[in-house]
Image (cartoon, rainbow, N blue to C red; front, side, top):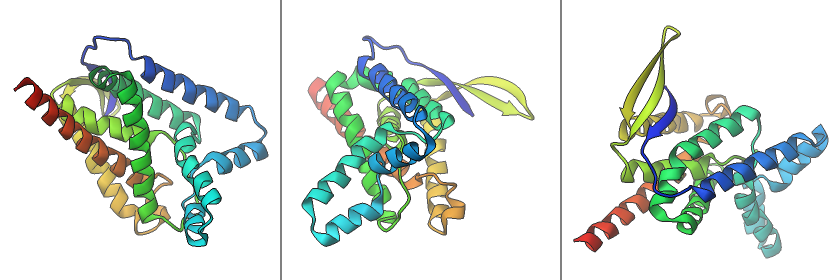
Length: 230
């Protein structure tokens, strides 16, 4: 299933959602303009490497620790390929505008960044000795999907569904589309624990961590609004 758009109108312009997309695209264009060796160095410098954070903790080197903690944030704005960028930015645009509309601009940005942090730390718990560079906005976007699942469960998602290469356009409720997506992340995340050949180079547990954080914040937000209106 390929999501095309959600049928869920907003009241205000998603300024920060658009800004995040522009920043990610701009950094990717800059990255693609670098020579190959400088691109690798760029990604290793600003991507999150769990093994490096573990070394900093073991050595008790606080300067090195802060540098590695910074990469948790900088890695959210890096992407490894054009398709990696497009899939993430499409999901951010699809779900981010409504979440920003609901939370407000600056709370949305704070939530987005914290979702990325929780996603990275979840990935770190499972791969704390991994030398593989972790990049991408998908952990933060998983948080957006998690809170969307709670706040707009019955919003309709217009989806392209392929049956024997024949296109069908159907509308599915958000809870079904996002729920199936999350189940796929869990199953692939479990498989990835048996070796990198099963992980396909994707940080499944980062997606899971970001999504769970989004669920948690979504439930707190709904509870607070319920008592406010009560």
